[in-house]
Length: 196
Ligand SMILES: CC(C)(COP(=O)(O)OP(=O)(O)OC[C@H]1O[C@@H](n2cnc3c(N)ncnc32)[C@H](O)[C@@H]1OP(=O)(O)O)[C@@H](O)C(=O)NCCC(=O)NCCS
Image (cartoon, rainbow, N blue to C red):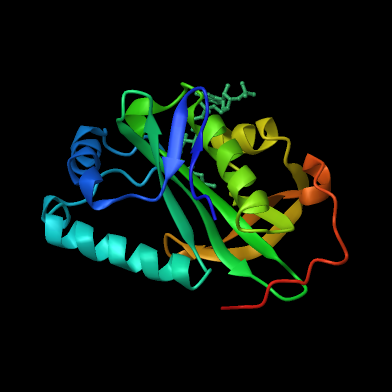
């Protein structure tokens, strides 16, 4: 499985130990949260190499379990500019997962989000062998809605009280792509992947 893509603007791949300095610099360089959905930086006590190693180990375990694929997004200057993920993979008759994306706020509006998400969708379909990828976006998150639409994702409807965030249950607008939307044909001879 090739967990790597390079586009005109970004490289996406799992973070490695050698990315520690890039990861730490990125955390220190971002601004305070710019909107409700912007997480902002980590606390200084979270930026040690020990904690970083622990985070990488957790991510590797999730990948091995085929449950959660979390990638770093690097620009072509090798700066870490965000993260993009395929989350909560469900196998059997569903073969579905959620797409997550975050660009660090000091890099917004440069097309990194779109390039990285597009590349991750390609990884999701061609490497992780998903049939359906969904993105759940809060209805007021205009930037994220613009991004989902620009990826060609289909708006399927409002999922009521879908996530518990910031002390309440919030609705999500669901955006979707299936392999058929990107021209990948379903081969009935391919066995459906089982949970690992
Ligand atoms: C949503 C987010 C990932 C967008 O990343 P980004 O790198 O700024 O997005 P891009 O530069 O690739 O732009 C994507 C689209 O948004 C548009 N966009 C860029 N800046 C914008 C702005 N200030 N307001 C509205 N739309 C904007 C772009 O024009 C592009 O649309 P287009 O292809 O139709 O022209 C980023 O703002 C973010 O991380 N936000 C906080 C976390 C978050 O909301 N995650 C999603 C949770 S569902």
